[in-house]
Amino acid sequence: MRVAVIRYPGSNCDQDALHAIRDDMHLQADYVWHEDRSLSGFDAVFIPGGFTYGDYLRCGAIAARAPIMAEVQRFADEGRPVIGACNGFQILCEAGILPGALMRNERQKFLCKDVYLKADNRTSIWTEGVDRVVRIPIAHGEGRYIADDETIEKMEDREQIAFRYVDPSGNRVDESNSNGSIHAIAGVVNEKGNVLGLMPHPERATHSKVGGTDGLLILNALNLVGSNL
Amino acid sequence: MTTVRVFVTLKPALLDSAGRTVAGSLQKLGFSEVEDVRIGKMIELNVDSFDETRVREMCEKLLANPVIEEYRIEVAR
Figure (cartoon, rainbow over the protein chains, first blue to last red):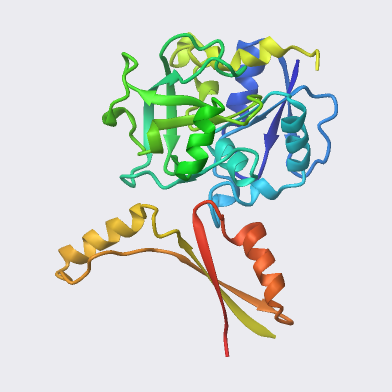
């Protein structure tokens, strides 16, 4: 398993992602520049967080049109694992690889804290290992997930809601949904379940010395798939 | 050269949290007549020739996100 960590101008969680995959998960990972046009030799993609292009126009809008995105789309279509965290989630939505959009937090504030997540289903590679409530950090100003009712209904039917914000006991309460996302949605997957976008940062929770290891339950999908694609 | 203005606004049904904050501030300043504020973007393009189809394509491909936004095109006279 070799993971491509895509770098754009303004990515700032790229080193965290590379470190988590290499040093905490003991998998291969390398950076890929957004202007590259090939992901040959890679098995999975991690689109890291940050403020690509200074969040100009809309968060992730310009990065979503980068040359490398045609390859990310190919990975998505071929069923290979793709994960986008925070700005990476915004980029995947802007690219149309995932449904919906991320808007300014309901109460305007930039939120930087730990949140609790519950997997809504266990049918995706990204959720099958998440058998309990997990604690993962968030750091975003525009993480309020939105999609129209019809889209949400379809996503519910197809088990595309991956994670929701909950309290430490796993209950969905308004206070846990701090950015005001529709139906407390924290992360979603594509129809095939191989592409995950989420606002929390699993790559920041992969070692007991830096805020816990719950992120590994999500990132373990990279281990499940192996290189047999 | 023609100047084209593209106005991008959030769909009316969506909460504009920035607009709501500005409305609250205006009300605190005594502008009690303000009921609601919506904030959008105005993107000014200078093009060597104006073709509405092309500008629409720009809006669909990049300038607006159809999931959350609407747009309107205006040609400066």
